[in-house]
Length: 253
Ligand SMILES: NC(=O)c1ccc[n+]([C@@H]2O[C@H](COP(=O)([O-])OP(=O)(O)OC[C@H]3O[C@@H](n4cnc5c(N)ncnc54)[C@H](O)[C@@H]3O)[C@@H](O)[C@H]2O)c1
Image (cartoon, rainbow, N blue to C red; front, side):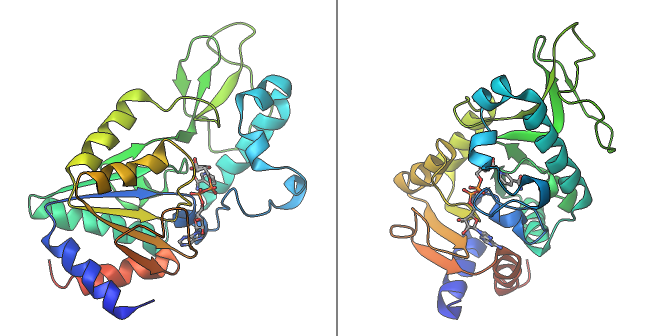
């Protein structure tokens, strides 16, 4: 990672009054949670996540889809936040202490940001920790133990099922949550895009909204992405290393 760029970004952050960060699956990779671009483990090796995470797949084969989501839910529960999650929580606390704004919009469904101490989290794609009734929309938080019936029957309506309260490919994002993320993106001075390939819309549009309204845009990713060519600064590396270094480079808060 280029130390000059790191210091430039740290300076921008230290002067910012409002910061927005968007995170993707990459920020949780160092906690052992796979992104959709990694191959899957064990029993799930032959499955393509992009084809399981759809309403059509659930319609066709609800047992397989819910079994996969329960497997992922247990994986998320067993994982711990990594230094990248912790650094974002520290950044929020530092800005809040100074009376400044910070909004974290995440595409992750794993709740690791909240467990790391982040308080203002907009879950753009819902959460795998909550499941909802296909008939009534009522939600519950399943026990931390493995589910026993697939697909799980809903306790709220005869004949209905429970599905994870996540946004599948082709579904709409929760409207107020996305509107809040858009408002924050329009008003921020610095926008950080962390561990996301910037190809899943509409979430990927937030960085463009921020740039169009004059924000300084920064990408933190192991690899180049769709946004790399036009962001103001790109910090290459694992977010669990880059973010703590960025915080340290900001100096005492
Ligand atoms: N942890 C989770 O909650 C989780 C996991 C997988 C998928 N998903 C869901 O699926 C959607 C698409 O998933 P996806 O996997 O294509 O995510 P994505 O589109 O956000 O892509 C992952 C990105 O992370 C980068 N990356 C990988 N390891 C990294 C690291 N250590 N540090 C920094 N960057 C790193 C990759 O280069 C890639 O650009 C997400 O938006 C989310 O809703 C969530």
